[in-house]
Every structure is written in C-alpha cells, then in structure tokens.
Amino acid sequence: MSRPGRDDSPDRLYTLTGGRAHATPDSPFDLVTLVVAECDPTTGMQSEHAAILRLTQQPTAVVELAAELKLPVSITKILLGDLLAAGRVSARHPRRAAVPDPDVLEQVLVGLRNL
Amino acid sequence: MDSATSEAAAEQASQPASAARTPLGATADNGLKIVVVGGFGVGKTTLVRSVSEIRPLNTEETMTRAGEHIDDISEVRGKKATTVAFDFGRITLDARNVLYLFGAPGQERFWFLWDRLFSGTLGAVVLVDTRRIDDSWYAIDRLEHHGTPFIVACNDFGGPTYAPSQIRDALDLDPQVPLLDCDARSRASGKQVLITLVEHVKKTYANQAPVRDQDTYAPHAPVSEQELTR
Ligand SMILES: Nc1nc2c(ncn2[C@@H]2O[C@H](COP(=O)(O)OP(=O)(O)O)[C@@H](O)[C@H]2O)c(=O)[nH]1
Ligand SMILES: [Mg+2]
Image (cartoon, rainbow over all chains, first blue to last red; front, side, top):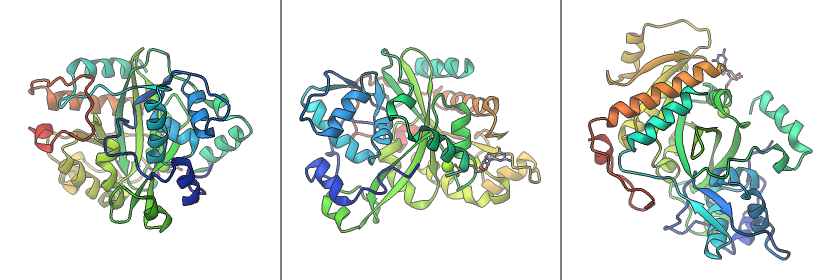
C-alpha cells in the first residue's frame, strides 16, 4: 500500500478540482462528517464523483472517503462540496458543543465497555 | 509501514476497494474523534489496529511548508506544499455514534494541522515509549496549549520499568492527568486506554455547564482554548 496521493502529480489534483486547491474556508465538512448518497452515479459524471456516490450508499466518513479515493482530505472535501451543492449527497455533521454533551460521553463509555 | 499492514494491503490489492469495506449502519449520524499521538514506532498504528473494527486506513492532508493550509493550486504546483500522513480506525459504538481513532505523528509540522483536522476531538492519548520519553514532550506541550484533555499511556516494549512518579517527573505531568501502562497489541489493553481517556474527559468537563450547540456545526467559530480549559 502506498500513501494516498503520493503519486498524484499536482496536475492531476488540478484537473480533479478544476483548479481549486482548498476546501473553501466555509467548507462544512469535518473529517468525521458522515456522507450519504442521495442518487446513483450517472454516465458522464466525473469518475471521482461517481466513486463517492458508490462509496456513500451507506453513511461514510469524509476521512474514509479520502482514504478509499487515495486523495488528500482537502481535495476530497472539494469534491464533496460539489456533490452537496448539487443535492447528490447529504451530510450528517458531528454533533458538537463547546463542552461535550455528558449524555454523549456516557454513550461513548457504554459503547467502549461493550467492546 | 510495517509488514503486517503491507501483507494485508497486498491481500486486498486484487479486490475492488468496496469488497474490503465494512460499511456503517444506515442510522449512523454522529462521528466522534479521539487522537493517539506519539513518536515514530511508539505503537500508534498497533493500538488503532487492536481496537478498530476495520483494518487501519491511511490518508493525508496537504499544507504549505509555512504550515498554512494551501489556498491556491499554484502552491502545490510550485511544490511549496507538503503533506502530513495519518492513519485511523473505527469503532461503532451504537446505532448512531461512531468513534474514529486517529494515529498521528507528534512531530512539529503536524501541529499546524491540528485545528483543521482535530478540532472538536474528544481527547487525546499520548503514547510513550519509556526508552525515548523526551519524544513526548512536544506533544504534551501542544495538547496543553490547545486545551485538549489527554492521558498518557506507556507502551510496554519490555524495557526497564519506572515508577509512575519518575515518569510524571520526566514528563512534568499535571497531577490530574491519568498515567497508565498499556500493551498496544492487546485489544483489552487498548480498550482500557480509551475508557481511561473518556472517563478523564468526563471528569474534566463535569463541573462545566453543558453548552448545547447541536446541529449547528460552525467550522470557523472554533471553541476558544479558554472555553475548553475553564
Ligand atoms: N513489544 C512490543 N512491541 C510493540 C508494541 N506495540 C507496537 N509494537 C511494535 O512496534 C513497532 C512499531 O509499532 P507501530 O504501531 O507501527 O508504531 P507507530 O509508528 O507509532 O504507528 C511494530 O513492529 C509493532 O509490532 C508493544 O506494546 N510491545
Ligand atoms: Mg504508524
């Protein structure tokens, strides 16, 4: 296994994202945002977009998509932003709080003890 | 990359990626993060593998050498950008909550990416090899700076054992930071490490009023360090 993205020339990344090298500052995606496909891939769709729609038939975290696509996280977020804007995927963002919800912490402990 | 991972990768190389994947349940809707930090070879990937329901996966993030996230493709093309690789595993906690466990290098350039990648993390495990204890100083420093709750786990490589007080002194550890021994190869031990961390996180926040901000994820309004530590 080689490190994802390693053999990607910058030109390939440029083509993939139409020259955008970063998720826009207001990218809504966290590493652990769970992405769900809202439609099937169509012919003629950019192959990375189609791959994302196949991978997200079940909820899949942004970081898992990046690993499967062998693309840097930031490039993956750009591709996801396109699909989100087109309504082709939906996003389940982590429930975050300034202070973690004690109920969630308790659920984490229960889950870990059941391992 | 160690040989076990390479073999696993070689085994799966002939299959389509999807064949090797274990998808989450349809109701999963809340991703949580815990980060394992430590020097090279300290056992981060081993610990992640021990508790993960998936074979650890590897990915990377890109940034400029100055530590800024790249904001123009020309910086990539001009090769001013560099990357930080990290691996991760996954634990489905229940029908809705899924915990991602990240193994991240503690080296200096990694910390430029902390906010981008690991803001909102529940907490961190600093994995220590007692033969190279000074490898952990920088990570502990940064976690304190970021106000991230953490514990210290000493991975057992069969070297000389030290009294906890000696390790606390060597790390200049605050008395309330939990310190424990572990064997990263053991699932039971890895599980105990995670439970110790989450119990510590719970205690850390116990006296703070919960500030609910459900469903309004604001990447550019990160929690200030004061809010996290006070
Ligand atoms: N003896 C011993 N070896 C370990 C332990 N944990 C990891 N190792 C070995 O140490 C090496 C480095 O571990 P790895 O998880 O790849 O370290 P990383 O660089 O922090 O991800 C591997 O060969 C592991 O098999 C442990 O608890 N005891
Ligand atoms: Mg590793």
